[in-house]
Amino acid sequence: MTMSNVQCSMTSVLAALVLAFPATSAAQTSLSIYRDGRVVVRRTLPQALQQGRNSLTLRLEALDPATLFSTDTSVSVASATVHYPSTANDALARAIGQTMSFVRSKGDTIRATVVRVDPPQYKLPDGRLLLGPPGEPLFPAEVVRMSPEAQVVLDASRARQRTEIAYVTGGANWEALYQVILTGPKAQVSGTATVTSESLRADSAEVQLVAGAIQHTRTPDRAREEERSVVRGMAAFSKAKVEVAEQAVGETHVYQLPGRLTIEPSVPVTTALFPHSSAPVVQEFIVPGVLPWRGWMPQNPEPNRVPVQVWYTIKRAAKTSFGDRPLPAGTVQLYQADSSGRVQLIGEASNDHTAPGRDLRLQSGDAFDVTAERVQTDWNQEQLPPIRRGMPNRQRVTAAYRVTITNAKAEAVNVDVREAHFGSWKIIESSVPPEKLSSTE
Image 1 (cartoon, rainbow, N blue to C red):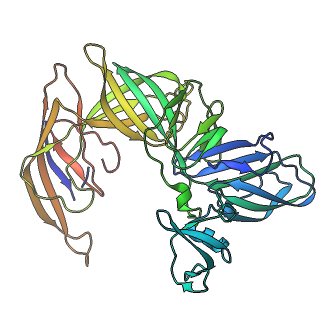
Image 2: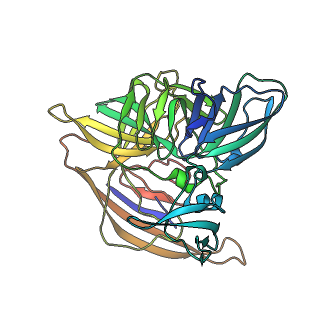
């Protein structure tokens, strides 16, 4: 195929909320997990509220108090103070004035009174002072806070039988993965969502996955990085077999996972997004363009081996079970069976959020048996008069290219050769009739 005389200037939180209430009273947890790591935690607590002011002590992991609010419109948060698990300096500060034991070496301890932490000052039993730690401190249990504590003050306009609160934290995310098995003109499609916790824990939580583009403008300064440390290692795998429920909320889509889930750090939980579906599929081979998107068309007579891209379009017609489903962004893996019936991975691509009724279009990779070579066979630059008096002269560049496509397959294939460039340009001669796809392509 020969394309010649191309005129242009071109392109081609989950927080385990543990209340200071009897264990027999069950709290309910509901989580909305976002792709960027944010988690909206909703808690229904068995603590009754009286009309007026109420003070509660809650143990809430990874709580950012600035985001705390009540989902009950008759209740408002008056104040919230959070104390995180103790560090060594925190415990020393709480032990000021106390006499503690310090380990200097195995079997060797010394007792000293904590005078202050910064700068460090310790008083020995004989009255002398040390301006540094006398050893590794052995802390009394009462000065060490082993879990976060939140002192929350709520104002209720009327008595309530329970307490409902919510807040935003981090430490968990999710991804969508789709498996597409190609069988000629049809594709068998399945999809899963996997929740991965980095630092959040929850027992028997209701979980929703939220898909959509939501801005993230706030970065909490002390929603404590220690609380969000990533736990790595071998992870268990759980897969639910029940289809998730989905609904649109605002400009997002919310997927309700079936049942209640226990989420632990480093233990991914996977569930199906929809039942196995069948859809038509179309394969395309595309040779991408050589022209730059903006600027001058270069002179380059050297032959250029170019990839032949492989694209698949999975049709999602409206008013079909698969076509009417919104698909969250994720990764699509394409499989095809070999001569022995074993499925092989033949391509992988990312997909954006796909609204109902929109086709799924994917570039899976480059062709192996279909190859292309492009060479510039002619290049010419000429001066053109200005459009009107006082304007500078114009330049016109005309170039010719030869694109040679080789097919090593047993069957014939169709290959598109595409060129795109910003501005006004046109193909003035071609061995194959050109088709204009858009104002620039």
